[in-house]
Amino acid sequence: MNLSLPYNSTKKGNSFYFTTDKGIDYKVSFDAAFQTQFKEFQIVEAEIIELSFAPVNTNYFLLDSLPHDARIKATVFDLVKVFFQQNEKAIIYNCLTLDNKQKARSRLFNKWFNEANIDYLVKFDSVITIDTVPTFFQSLIVHKQNPKIEEVKKVFFDLSNELNK
Amino acid sequence: MDSTISNIGTKISTIFKEEIVVSEEEKINEFLDSLLSLKHYLISQTKTLSTLDELFAQLTWHDIQNEEEEIFLKQIIEEGKAIAKKLVPHLEYAKQTFKEKIYQTELSNFDNALEDFEDTVFEVEEIFFVIRKDKKLNDLMNSHITINSKIHTPKQIQFLQYMKEKEAYMYEIMTGNDTEEVEKKYNREFITPIQLDKKGK
Image 1 (tube, rainbow over the protein chains, first blue to last red):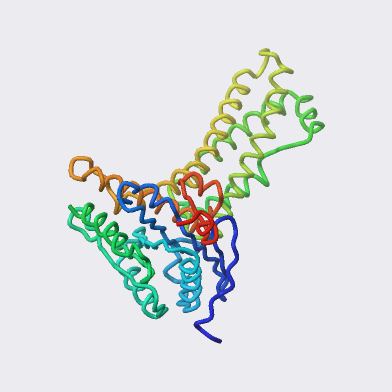
Image 2: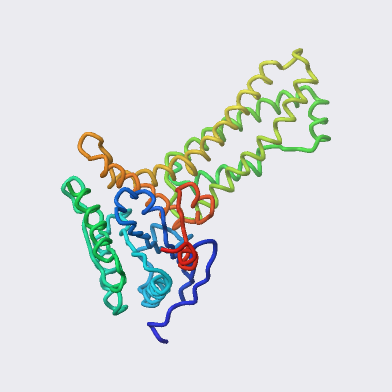
């Protein structure tokens, strides 16, 4: 089996779904709520869309026991590539903190990004510390040819700096 | 001592099958034909309902241990609700028949026991399937993202509220509630790459 082969994803509503070999359904979404909420930071109209992906309709407390599956990474980044083929917006990824494993998620996302090896994308990372605890791990992915790359980076780090005050 | 939901549930199930009399109208008529039998019926059913009431209350001393136990508990609750529903017409029929002339104490006791039983079944369902589940979610939501207007800046509060809402949404979809209604509830604005393209940069 080719472990780098993406699963077939289908569009339902405004999200993408795919099912792994183990029968786990995943949802991948590009969410504009983030830029709506933080529009005051969009000083250069740099639109930033939030990427979310997660298994759906499963037992949250069993998530840790889900098997490692390289094809999930391949599918998510396949959709990320589609995203960047069709627009010049940037993607932000906020690691979930529900189970306090945000740091591990951040490491995994970094590994996935490096392994995906998409040469026209660049990633920036920031950590938002709340009450002296590094709590929110964020990544920004931008197309290297994005003419607004510097402005987008500024928006991303301005938000991070503001929140870290 | 009944120490598990399964043990108590089995006892409840046995009483449902062997001691609760949910008879056809004809059988009730037979009861009503014999005043003595009626009195006995009212007293025994009142006692049985009180026993069931206590057993249902004991269920809440425990947590659900596994999926099998959860299914069994739901079944017991549904059977309890169905039995209460069937007993109500019997009580009303008896009340109308005797019109406050005989067996008023027994009828009143039966009425109270049935009402208590209905309330307890409802409460047990609420405790297991609404309050405790919400508490699990609330514990999860509140354990790591706490907002304090005295120490957090307005921007931090805005961000923390956003993340709390986003994580509550993610929790819901991951645990079986991936619906359009939930997307709306949490103000998600999903757009596909194609739609983004059409909207322009």
